[in-house]
Length: 90
Image 1: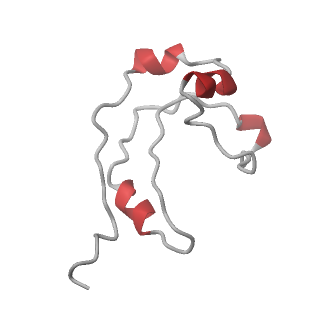
Image 2: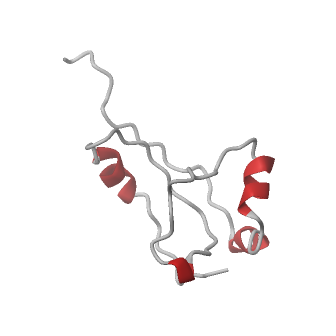
């Protein structure tokens, strides 16, 4: 048991995008952005917005990997969330 790899490995983001960089993506087609990133960053088609009238947003994402019924990664990554002064819809 002592030789098992750690259950949770947190890597802090090296740098976050500036407000200017975020605004440059406002109005961009998500599929085009994902194509430019070799297919990375696209969500699975089964992920749907909670409210259809507010499904457009723009900003950095904090991602984590968690196995089913295991929310340790979610709780571990919560400490890395940085509050913004305002939430901006694009």
